[in-house]
Length: 568
Image 1 (cartoon, rainbow, N blue to C red):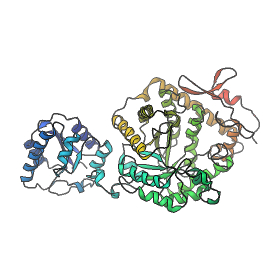
Image 2: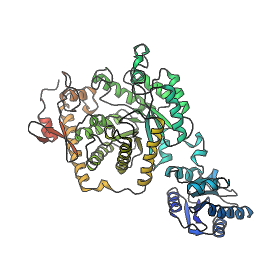
Image 3: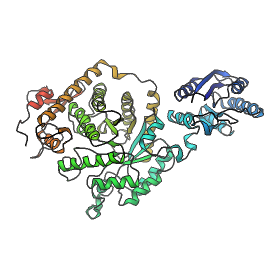
Image 4: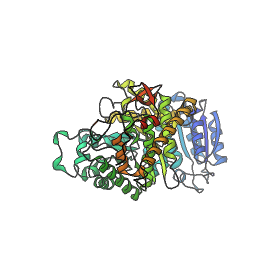
């Protein structure tokens, strides 16, 4: 890579160099040797530098009046075309290679305002034109491949998650949930979203009928088709939704696990949509939350089978577990402990690539600083398990209850939450459509929400304020880690006599929920489940709360007050 040279300059009488300088900075990160000629560089000076240095790429900018820009660009084209070709340059098709190529011309790219770029585009000279609507990932892709993404085909895009992450890093992949009540509207929407090239992963949202009754169509309730997502009745339906996504930037596709027949549905998803990764909760989608009728322990055991199944196939896995507790107002300690327990199960069950999702803004009344502290604690606990055989990838998202029913407000909240989440340097951002509080995201909402997030990423990617070093954040992070470790050790010690590995034992974890060791205020009280935990947000933290004595409970106190009946 060190033999690739890129020359950058603002052309003619243009003195605006910020865009060129940033582009050259990205090029240096990609292994280029850069030559910056500065502002207001004459055509003759540019061509002489090209002649002497034989660059792979020449990056020129003009951001003044379009008519003046056209004059200087035409001069460049005429003088360059009159020259004899200089051998020894790197052409576009060789930019992704590692050796030195022999080709007659460098790759020419141009950056300017939209009016200037539109006029220059008509000249047909430049290989790539940046007009301000593109993003950092477009520049990175160009520097790595020599092609602008909109001009490339499927060959430019990896078909698996880990490969796609490598192509985009350090820019995070964007994922968005999408599924409309109408199958045809969903198919058309996926194609529209794919052609927009703003989304990397279509997270297919199937309706509850499909999740629960895909293999038992006679049990479907026709009146509920489309409730919560797109109705898919057979494998051909999944295949069609995948097929319509194969355009634009060829986004990956993934789908949540079912709430019944989970292994059979996993095989279908792998076969039809090449499921980019499996997302499955450990403790939910059962009698506990009403999203299925499976007994709690049974669903846990099936979830573990599902995790192991994907581990054997080498498919990444996400346990969307910690935020399920947070969405039900469990205190920060339980969310953090479940981050560790989730990853622990995935590692034990053979997962190599683990997607750890961090939902910010739950509960929505958390302060930003204390919310960040909670997520940092979750990361510390989860990534303590990482090694060469267990790789952890961070996925961030805004919280479901956070967004306002006023779309204008929600857009601001989405941007603010994204800026907060950029502090954890996510590999994936799960974009939540700004319309979440009022209706399922339509294609235009998906595209606009992704553009909002991309704008924040662009501003934060190369230098965000270091909120992780805020002393209050550091202190709270330490508190949560300490409390979560106490809870984890409590479970291991309490069940040590009846289980070789309590944290990965479905019977143990089920019993923990039934006894209230793992509990949340929104769990419905019954003869099976406690649902007695009370929490309260104080100073921006979600804490366990003793309402009778009006005091905060640490884990030692909370667990000490539980019924200490013998483990059955």
